[in-house]
Image 1: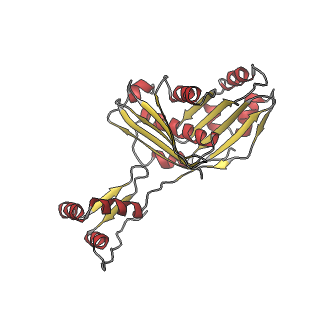
Image 2: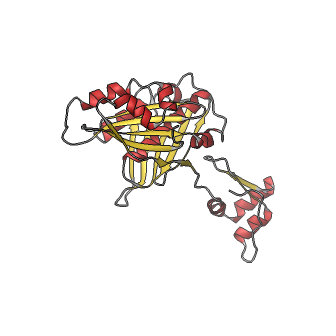
Image 3: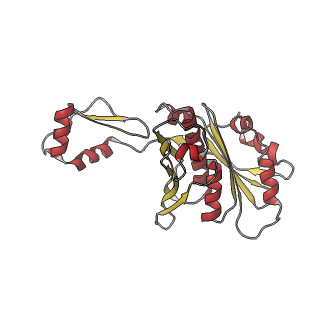
Length: 291
């Protein structure tokens, strides 16, 4: 039985190829059930979840790694964010249902992909912006790593209504031990079936693929869905509006409600709450909804 919501590192013995495997069950369930996604949109979002977790484990960083795609197609925004602590959240926004899962059909021909890291080891942010090239998200990420990082990479991503799974292979930089290592590894990886990637535990899957040359699997690390929204953050948003605008919204709507797009948590403020935010000596009331 495979471990749920985890990522595993592995290396193919006596070669210059490393890899990562990810399975997300509860994490994916938490993400997909917060919004009623069409099947095509759900598939692309699931692939993005698996891919972003794989990327987050393949580099060293502090803070948050974010994959974002913007376009003018049926899906105009897709965002997945993973923290160094292994928490993930994500969403997609769409105006219509794409005809299929090809990138052009989903995001449009002029889409851009942004991969950003909140802070690297030196405390400096990093951001890469590229055209969304290829037919699939796997193709786009392969091209990104090749052109931006000069690193040969292959992504294998699968999505079901219960699970998302992915495998990442990368050739280590530097002097190659064997020029055929990469070709052998990717040829074997391409034989993996959808059901194998989704259902098999890491040890069984890697043995089936790479047992002839030997493969070493490391202990997995946990991944979980978690949103960083809070009442304190939404309070700051309302204070940023200013007292006049906040009271105007309150008079028109009876209360102020802010819903987090990532997790669908609602934060509601009534007249007592708003008074407490802008008037000293008045204590804000406790609304019914809390995160």
